[in-house]
View (cartoon, rainbow, N blue to C red):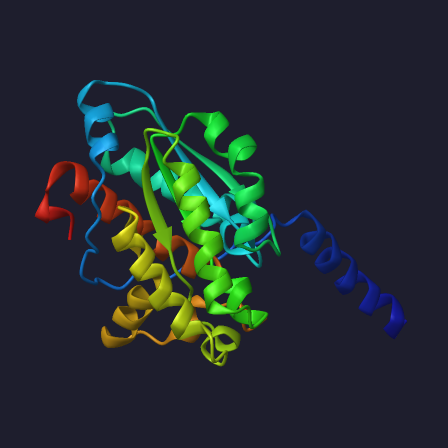
Length: 250
């Protein structure tokens, strides 16, 4: 008798749980307000003024592909397209994700013609250096590979943005991480490219009072959804400032 009463209670509860809609994924917390990084994008500015469609090619490794994100739509290139659509609503902008997990500068240089130049991009964002730091690649070798890739990109009438490494636990622990970020800054200056520094961005997040763990995945290397989203937001703001000179975007 007691078992029968229990079943009368449990069955409706089980049915209710089966019929209930799935719980929505929690929205990431808001991004910290930080200084806007300076980019120089003359090709993008001219294309926007002429009303031309814009292709932005995002070249890189797993940080570009979106490793540890909830979905590919949470990768930084996908978020960047959404943010630019909001900030530059008059423009037709496509952000193409050309990230491949595990690749280094040499492999990215080898596929640059097929995966990037063939798109005839207006802007190329090259995220590079994380795997070099993790694998203790020599700085001289890394410098030569990136310089060769940048010279290859000159074949396209495109603006180039180099993106340095995130401040994740595994990369910060690498003795080569700081040297690689410095090499990327030097290469951007000498090869007429812009630098979007994730290292600086994440330091700015910390200075604003935000804990870095809130932006990083549990693997100790990649960003989480919030990290990718806030990186895209900061990059979109910097791009918009570069083409509009609009300080209100801060």
